[in-house]
Length: 177
Image (cartoon, rainbow, N blue to C red; front, side, top):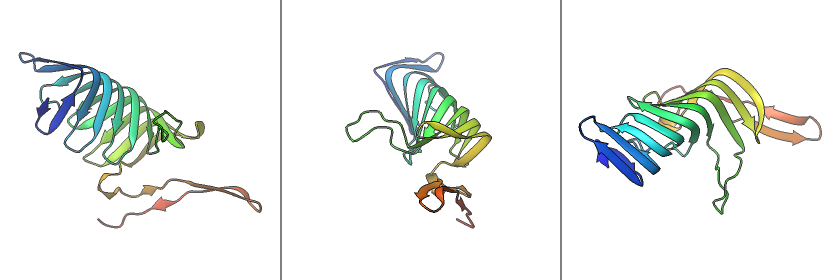
C-alpha cells in the first residue's frame, strides 16, 4: 500500500474502509517519507499509514542507526518504542549472521523525533560489548539526519603501557548550520 508518501508491505494486509484501520501481518515493513523503515511481525495503522502500532519492531533510521523494541508506536511522525535498544553499529556479520554490536544504548522508553532530529531515552544504559558501563536517567543525541547538533561523541578507548586503560570523552559544539 502507498499513501501520502508512506508505504506498507506485508504478507497479509487487511484494510477496513469503514473504520480506516489497516492491519498488516507477517514480515511487515512500513517506510515513511523520510526513509526510516519499521519492520515487525504485525501492525495496526491508520489508513493514511502515518500513525500506528507495530509489535516486535526494528526501526532502521535513514542514517543506518537501528532501534529494536518489544513494541512501538508512531503518532504525528514521532516514534515511541518500549524496552528498546539503539546501536549505529552493524548487528550482523559479513555472512548475515546476528552479532553483538560493539556498543549500544538500552532504555525503558525511546522517542525518535525526526522534526527535532533527536533520539530521547528514559532510564538509559550505555553498554560496551554487552556490559553496562553507564546508567543515565535521561539521555538524548542527534539522530544522524541533518548533520546533528551539539553533544557527546562516541567515546574513544585505548590502552598503553604507561597509563593503562584510557577513555576519552569528546564533546562536539555546533556553532551554526
